[in-house]
Length: 213
Image (tube, one colour):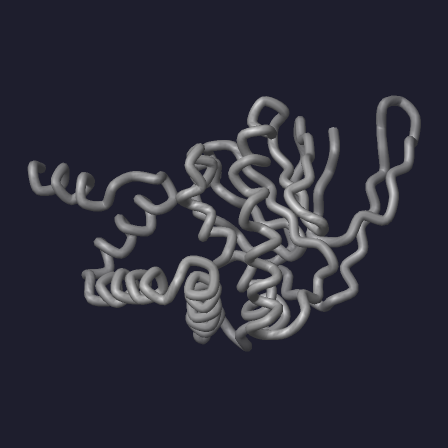
């Protein structure tokens, strides 16, 4: 089965007996938590001049359509805000529904929940966030887990800068209001809200269900 890793593919060698050796190189130093490896029935399609989406064969065309309009636009936008993208290629791996997070910013391949493939391109800003991690969190990481909030804080700032450039200032303002409201929630509600984002569920509907318990 094909293998994807957090680096640039450098070769594929047939070892016989149905086995293959896949080689990757990552020239930029990264902390261990950012390294990821994936294998399975994976197919790929181009979503831009330096990007592909990888996922299951049956899900490939829907994923390609969902992401091909925005991915390169997001990259070009953040390059104007910060500096040129350093990782050579930016790709997205759409995982099975069992993946419990919205996205994970592994270098070269963002790992993403299938719930962003909604058929209306309304959830692709998750990619803007994970792409922003290519600068804040991946190129420069927190010194300790105590300061991990710096990764997410700067990344959220860059994500909203992308949103402002691509969607307009009102979109960024609305995102900031939502983020501020989340900060005011009790911890357990923050967990519920994050889960709703990952599962593509309505936060208000979940609150209504909890109120009935």
